[in-house]
Length: 280
Image 1 (cartoon, helix red, strand yellow):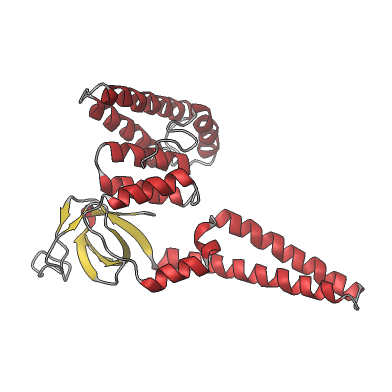
Image 2 (cartoon, helix red, strand yellow):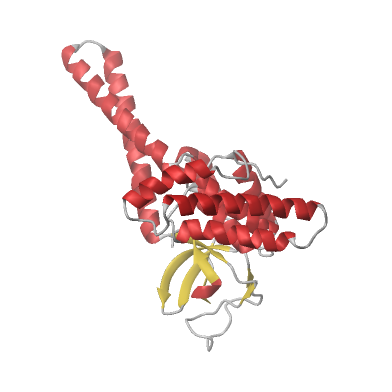
């Protein structure tokens, strides 16, 4: 079931106002704090107005939703705001507009900040079920996600803080071992915390390696002919085109073409404007 609640479908303008102060102070935003707050408020009002019109059967709801999406996109592109609630709202709006590709793209971006949010996970699963292309995930990946659930489910910030805490605890117990040599439980605690610190550090290293080598993306075009090379002169890779919402991993790029791998291991080339990376 599709849900429009995160904490809620709207974002607090006050949150953006405070975020804008920080972004402007660092020179990352081309929007002032007041402009960002105004855009946020306008987007909320337009989204709610669109919902009311949609409930009344008024097709003008689509125009309101498009305007709301445009304002949120400005906050991302011009204001340099990146947070789970913002991308979640964009995903909701694009779903309302029946833009499956951009809905999944923004839900995936939101997932980097709020990976365990139940509404986000429910919406992402629902929108994925609406995709025309169903590319099965290899069994080994599903097993890895089950065994190493903490690596896939916990956000990086939690793992970073967990590493610092367990690393510090390991050293504390190691020092206590030197002071109380006959206490075997201290050695076990030292080893346990050291193991946890190593596991979390390894998880963070794998994340960084994946960010460098495996960049996820989403097909945005309604019907995309995937080819065997970086030119329209190459033969299609598959008998059927790829459709909006199909997810992939970037392998490489050449000019206006992207070489991508689907979740089942098949590779192909698509035009750059027909897809977008989760982390551009």
